Image: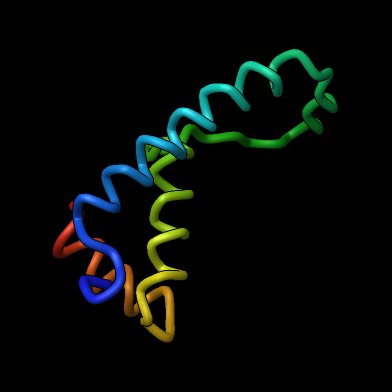
Length: 80
């Protein structure tokens, strides 16, 4: 990933994605949602949606062949 995206680029991407997610969340809350099904469990995520989206964007620009390899060799070592 260091070939295509630098750490500064990741920071800028995260900021842009976070701004988008904040605007999108406000719109999403105004739209009526389907009710939860009985027995459905919803656990809260430990990561923000903007962090997940940023990692997905970085993977597509990284040149790694698999997401597992990208996550283990780059995200856990460099971005954590």
